[in-house]
Image (cartoon, rainbow over all chains, first blue to last red):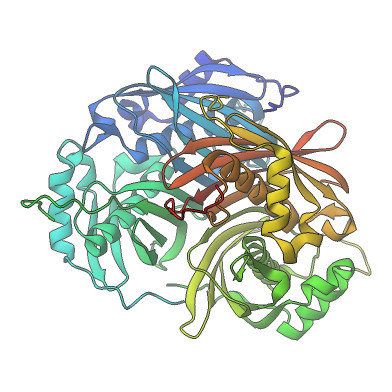
Length: 155
Length: 155
Length: 155
Length: 155
């Protein structure tokens, strides 16, 4: 399936991880579990290092944890491809849960489906386990705020 | 808009809150923030007592926190109306984020749209603030496992 | 559940039906089956008069026909509440199908969940039959184009 | 992104096109515009030959037409991979519209994300134009009825 290879990321995975940490000081403990591991033209790969805090009864990774991974994947896409404006917000996210995932690394393969002026649409395949089975799939939209023109803006 | 008043809940809000606590021992710290405040025929009202842990930069309640409230709302619906089978799982959840919510009580008004044998569909209006503005709306599906017939089943 | 009663429609059901006809000349034959029957602050009621063309095998109203009713419901909302700009387009629509509907009148009760500057979010309860059972439910987003300032603009 | 190559289709594109025609006699005129062009392990490719009937004002392919292509894509997946039971029904479909498409061939690349006993989840990339740009993306769920055991069942 097609990826939009004409898009150009403006940040590396390491840079966007730094941004995630500073943008979310109070959630640091939780968000340290979520990180970008690769940024490429038109998408990114993110990872949840799922431990006991992310499990629901039966030892499977909870829905909110997988939702958060999908949301972080979209956020990494918008930060790296639309400029580092931490004020972009999710307007819609649709997620299908398909298989159980156990504690351990959960990968999210994220594609930008549309990068518009005010909206970015993305989808994400969330995979886990030895066979890298699809455990969930999500589609979402981020609203991109109009560019501000502050002279000292970090962008 | 119609609610399915022919449905009959089999548990009170207090009983389902007990169940939420025992079913989620390891998440207790987090899930204490989420509770059922009313159960009625065809739906329920749930509440997130949003504090600093639920905020993202700018002081607004995070998307994952609102997603969790929607998911808990559906879970309370399925537990109270389909029998207390903690093994029901979310198969789909679609959420639209519409306004910012600040720390404080966030209410979720939840309706059962369909209670089938194997699937329950619900929606939830999430409201907050002095005017009880709609801050998010979600629709979701829970998969209901087939009834087990163990003689000592706790249900 | 709350409706946004502060919103004020700028057109009647009869006026918006005229607009639907002129905006969709080539689809007239099909769209004559879809009409607004009421417009009120914060929402509208639309109707599909389902006949043989809208049925799939087994005599039930097809998914695309119900999708179209949901889409028309959102379009009537945006036309009547955001100004008669026929260029508004659907950006997202999520629909759950819950019960079968037979030929005959199908009603869609439509609420505006958010009327923003550039996006409108709505949901719709689609009901049919003697008991007005919910047969489908949809949530959608319309993108509202920036106001144009043509001197002779009909708005 | 991964496709479930372990799945095995039980019908060819030609066979499923025959089935679509006989299963939808009354919709034949319309559904002749929609066809399967390839069936492969874990997915299929479908095509809408968009003409004037599928356009909305401005000459762009309408939302309901793209929704129908997505729905047909899922239907072809379930018919070819779960057995030719025409009674499978869509329970959920979420679609994002991203770019305008003009009259002409519109392709839908469809993947099965999960083939369960009672539910199939799929997604579809809908592309068009000289660059095969993504014009829409959908995710959906089909409910698969329990196998019936009629001796003369065509399956």
